[in-house]
Length: 125
Image (cartoon, rainbow, N blue to C red; front, side, top):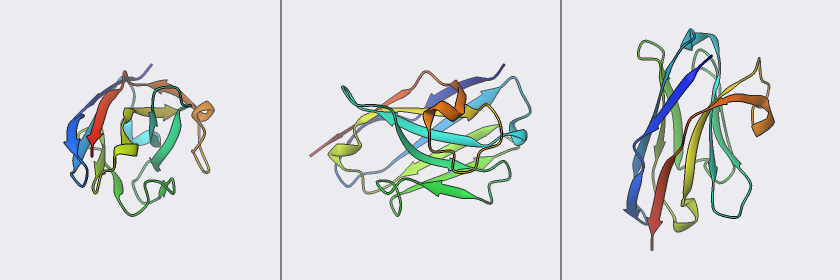
């Protein structure tokens, strides 16, 4: 069992930045990849980024590439999502997640078994 707790969401104006954190417990953090997803009202859950166990390999959705950075601190059992140049269309609830096993792309919600409760990000124009 893995517990995940997101934090760092809030309200910002377009062009601003936020840094999301996801603290984990319950399993050896360095043993698994991590992913960030988001879900806006009325829309399906959307892949944002994922990072490998070691942090060496990352993958981003086109909507996040160049603006968002995923990172992890295995000593702190925490994964981060630095979000810059935020746009109103980035408004959503953001979730971190742990996959059920090894992932290749890791961009499908169905690959993930543990989810946090989510943190709201609101970007105003």
